[in-house]
Length: 451
Ligand code: RVP
Image (cartoon, rainbow, N blue to C red; front, top):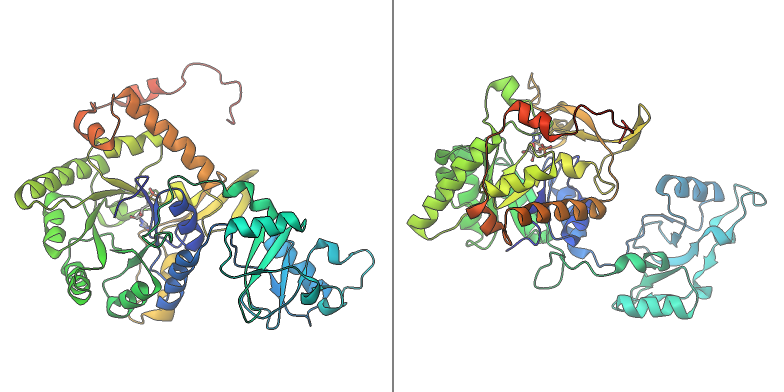
């Protein structure tokens, strides 16, 4: 398994759900769907990613014919989408009975209690597509009949998807798309070392391509047992990573346990206060350099190359190149992805700026899910993560394109045409605090201080 861009999104409630996973895989990376949720909801998110078909959108705005105009208006406000599926049971895949768009009602004239069935465009007046048609065929129907959207139904008239005219442009090629042998997007999932005997089979059945034991401290017998169990139970066919570790001993421990990749980093995450709270962790660069060396020695000795992932602490785009140059094979980021439209959290206006919520998995906010699932001790007295905001940054693709452009430019300056060459040849130098000041704009009055 190989990534097309060396990025994965963090195993966090505030980062990696199915929307993030779809967006990132389309752009060549991979998300690990957060494991701090019940097994069935996590498996459902994995399933949604595997079911994703470019251009075919599962309808998120649906009502029954018995609903009223007031419900239509409320739903449009909530979702921001103005094409509503009318199904027998109001579900996204129920029997399709009609469709409502802005052309079907007039708020100024129609009473708010007017029933959907009295103003929807009914099924027998609609043009629909059949499940199985290609995106090109669907777009031809949209074009020929001058439609704005085409509902796609199965042989029982159940609504499956909508194809929208306005999406046509945005469905241009995604050259880096990360897909499996069946052309389905790839997706990972986080697991823990407690309920893995139930969680892992459910995630594998849902189609997860790779798993990762999610813990701030991976150098533990629990983690070894989890990895060994998964390897044995699935005859070595399920890929599973472990972590996090910060030194050679930790790396070797998980390598011997059978981990397919190993995550590096404790306490460096932007929302992480593990070092402050427990005194546990290590500088990210020091950790990466040591573990990368351990990986290379292990490879020389055994012939097995176990990729390492630098997890946490990356803020600037150049940090990414640095982590790769220091030896990381790929990077996990939370804060970076949390800022985008596709992350699962709310976008808010705070102090005249758009922000998105971002909270650590070790915060009480994230840990609250356990009271539904795990029983046991939920009354832990301290937090290892904070609840915060990050500046909103727009769409993932736009940002990723810029980041990758910058990284390529840095690599170009290092004379490297591949990550491997960068690792071997880049010259890394220690910098002083003064040199960092010197590296930014300094001693000038910036024209637009808000930029
Ligand atoms: P960052 O990209 O700097 O936001 O860091 C994200 C990483 O921080 C995660 O991948 C995880 O390793 C770590 N994390 C997540 N939650 C917490 C916490 O609550 N302490 N830490």
